[in-house]
Image 1 (cartoon, helix red, strand yellow):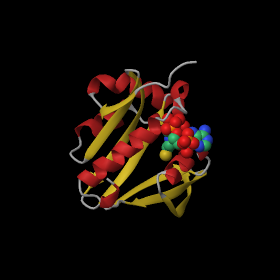
Image 2 (cartoon, rainbow, N blue to C red; image 1 turned 30 degrees about the vertical axis):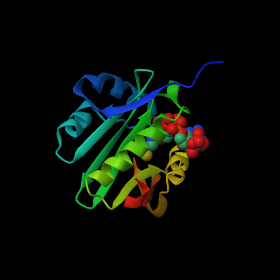
Image 3 (cartoon, rainbow, N blue to C red; image 1 turned 90 degrees about the horizontal axis):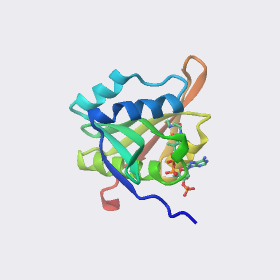
Image 4 (cartoon, rainbow, N blue to C red; image 1 turned 120 degrees about the horizontal axis):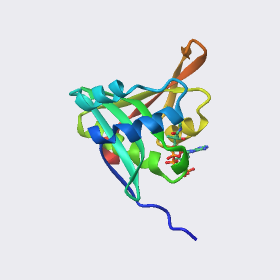
Length: 154
Ligand SMILES: CC(C)(COP(=O)(O)OP(=O)(O)OC[C@H]1O[C@@H](n2cnc3c(N)ncnc32)[C@H](O)[C@@H]1OP(=O)(O)O)[C@@H](O)C(=O)NCCC(=O)NCCS
């Protein structure tokens, strides 16, 4: 029986971008372009992280944290490495980082069809706060979710 892989989380680097882009393209119908990720690497209030499974880049999360509000802008895990806890650890690290940067609330938008992502966010204590109709490509609704960040949790 194979052992569960060892997951480590670290800041995203320029040299990660090809692997990140491949996961992005495998995960979304309207994927971010390389320049989006470059912007996240350079912007003062952006904190992109990658998750490594046994040393291999398996997923990433893009966090923006500005004063009291933080946002998850993007998260994906390589389809071949899903279901092994990579996203959970990426999100836990993003939550800690947002708290460290002084955020009081962490918000995100998710396609209403993304059941794995919605389940992940609810497991982490996010609540549903609204719907943005036909937000994705003028077709699919976005579900708005938020988590109040509580200092006693860290
Ligand atoms: C959503 C996503 C990031 C989850 O990544 P993952 O590494 O497979 O998730 P994890 O293994 O860390 O799972 C953590 C929790 O998420 C939930 N979850 C993950 N996959 C799920 C699935 N297929 N169905 C239901 N819940 C799921 C569960 O609560 C799970 O905890 P559990 O295993 O103890 O039940 C991944 O499916 C993905 O990249 N999807 C495509 C991109 C996407 O939709 N991103 C979100 C945009 S807002």
